[in-house]
Length: 371
Picture 1: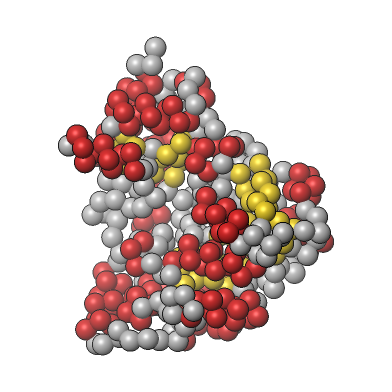
Picture 2: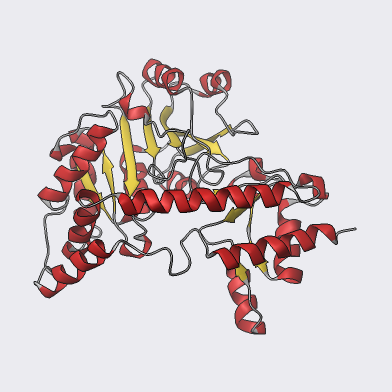
């Protein structure tokens, strides 16, 4: 990502940014009622401290959202956080002690590894099985022992967009070994039918041992607002609230009011965004699959694809460098997400149609001219 920005700054050449984990272009904006609620809240003076765990009315709305997913939730089981990333950080620093083992999907989300290690824990990698990057249940069972404290699940997954299945079997293992689950569900509303979003927190026996994390960033195109949430048992939320009040104090009130408008207001904007992204996904997968040396599985959700580029004869980093240095296209090498990401790159398609078409055209030129 830094290389793409540096190249654009130094040369003045137009770089096609397909590496960013954010929305691009005017077609991706928060719904008007969200922006209006935020502006009105600032104008009305909602710029003071508020309760650390979040505004009561927002916590209630989040509790209803979690309940709709099958995890009955009360206000006291909800914490409003500075984005999903801070929720994950707080979760790991609260749960993990020296010597604890945390099972982490490979490929997975890199910041989680950082905080596991920072807390004194040990990262235990669970290699995901291609092409749909599922957990190998037998292998997962072998990884669990008396030192296993947490299993991290991300569904739909980063970086490949596939949903996690066999949740009942994973749940049985966690209950047998007394393992907590952190379930990162930031793309919960960006799952494309006929695929469905399901949370492990809704499986029998898992409500008390799951910490469910989500955000307003993706579903409501509110990446810059920095607001997310987590749901867990009351004791854990109480401990995390102490952490939050001694770090960031609280999420700004006007941001929380915007989030409340997002969650309780019309949801047609969310559905329209999902449908728009599904169309871009389909075009992206079809274009990549037609290129020599590239195979692209259609993801269940998110706004990423994770194509297999091994047929080009290049490593992930070589392919990434080739695209940015010679064709001014930014993508992310799959190895940024673990060694199981080798042979893949992550491409973002939440961009304007003309940018997407130009980026895919340049990638096609890059692979066709390899010989």
